[in-house]
Each structure stands twice: as C-alpha cells, then as structure tokens.
Amino acid sequence: MSGQPARPVIAHMVYFTLKDSSQAAQQKLVDDCHRYLKSAPGIIYFAAGLRVPDLTRGVNVQDFHVGLHVVFESRKAHDDYQVSETHLRFIAENKDNWTQVRVFDCNA
Image 1 (cartoon, one colour):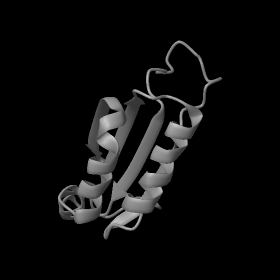
Image 2: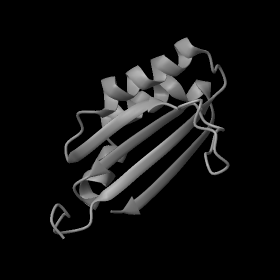
Image 3: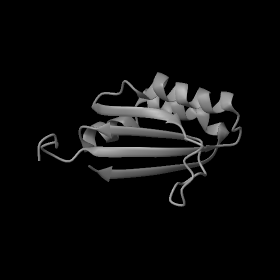
Image 4: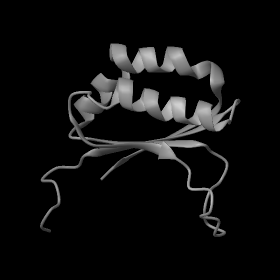
C-alpha cells in the first residue's frame, strides 16, 4: 500500500491524568513533552496536547488530561528513548503530578 512503511513502526501512546488538573498544569505538561521528548532520535511523528473537552460521544474516553503520541521508526528507537536522559528527566520533573499514566504501544 502506498505510504505504508516497509517494516512495522512502533506507535507509543501515553495518556496522563493529573492531580492538579488546572489549565496551567495541563499546559506545563504539554510544554514539557515538547521540550524533553520531541527531539529523540528515531521519531517519525510526535504530538502532545490537551484532551478535547467537547468530544463526548459514548466511545470517547474522558478520564485523562494530556495525550502524547510518538511513532518510532523501529523498536530500537523506542527502547533507546525509554532509557534516554531526556525521557528520564521528563519523568522526574513531572511524575509528582500524575495520578495515572496509561501507555499503549503497538506495531503500526
């Protein structure tokens, strides 16, 4: 199929629920996602943002505040990212405000 990668890529999706769910706290986490995570080697797609509050169909999950979506070119790129200094720093600086973090990884 045109536009499909020759080999599977890894889609890494993370959903954060925050203790302090103020707009400022949500925006800080989005900003830190961009600041610390966006430039990792092997990323072919990156997005971080706030949940869209008015999308409220029965299938819309609404118990999170910030979503992070990263597509890596390979499993190695994903694994290297997980132990990278910038990823670990992002976690250290933000984890105290997390009540729940859900991670979904899949081949794409």
